[in-house]
Length: 92
Image (cartoon, rainbow, N blue to C red):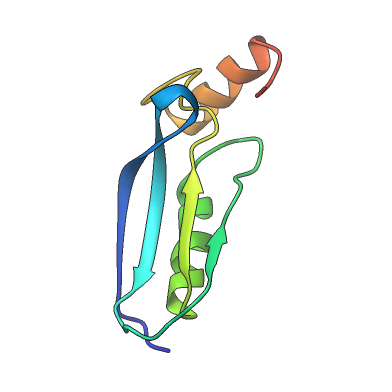
């Protein structure tokens, strides 16, 4: 384990070919490792959630957090995206 990693916002392909924003972090060390999917809390895809993703990478795991509000409010600030999702009845 080390603290060298790559971390970036990316896009993953979801249902019916729709793209969803996600935050991905991977350790630089090449040994085999497991992966973790981090699900963000209601306020959304925020700095604290991204820190959790980086922490898993620091511990030696590939980690990703999909932005569950992406379809409802692409590119919106976490609080605004959460409000939009709530106004539409939540995330399906």
